[in-house]
Length: 80
Image (cartoon, rainbow, N blue to C red; front, side, top):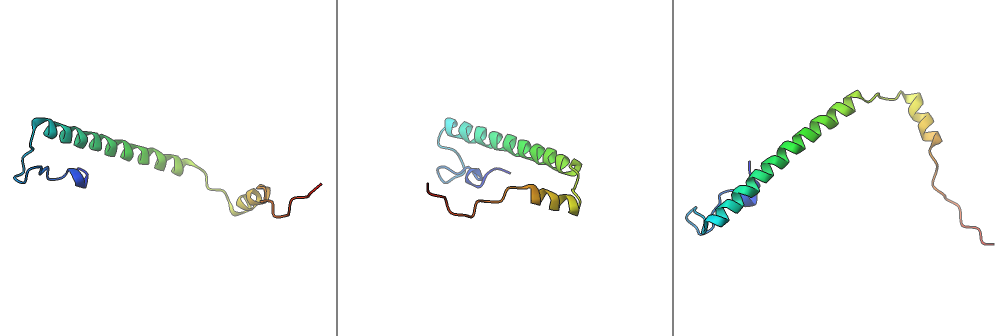
C-alpha cells in the first residue's frame, strides 16, 4: 500500500496527472516506499531472531547487574 499522500494520484481532478513527469515521479516514490517497507520487515525479522536467541537472565543475575551499575551522583560538589 502506498503512503496516504500518494494514493489516488489525482492532480487535476479527473484522476490523471497533469504531466508525464509528475506521474513518473509518483511512481518512483511509490516504488521507493515499497522498498522501504520490505527493508523494514527484514529488519524486524532479524531483530526478532536476535531477541529470541538472547538468553534471559535469571532474577538473581538481574539483581547483581543492578548492584554493579553506578548510581548517579546525588551529593553536592565540594568546593576547595
